[in-house]
Length: 126
Image (cartoon, rainbow, N blue to C red; front, side, top):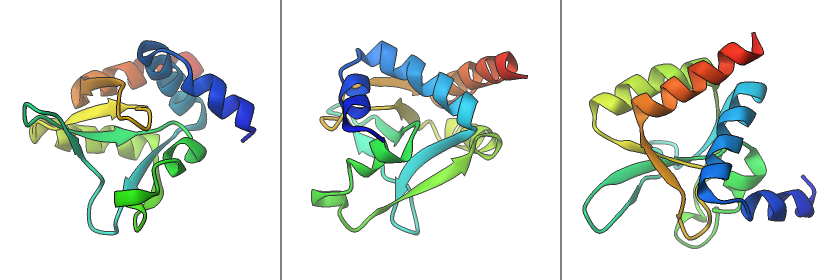
């Protein structure tokens, strides 16, 4: 991916990055996560809420593979498998951080909400 694209997309507002995420995932039918072979990376806030960060493209997820996550790796999940997985995440009351930046700012939504957004967008591609 061209560095200008990474910079331009990263400069979008949280809302615009989330919309980019939904459109790109529906188009490519894959989602990128970071894991350590046994679990996905989670992030938390000061109120003990936890979220799993997800990205629309490999290059954005790879930006996070340093410091505390340097021994982790990226993994692509097919969108329909991801949608099923969101059902399980929802039952566990874990949120999803849709396309956060390096400082982990971004849109955090309930798993069910992200599933609904993706299902709607996927219908546009059928």
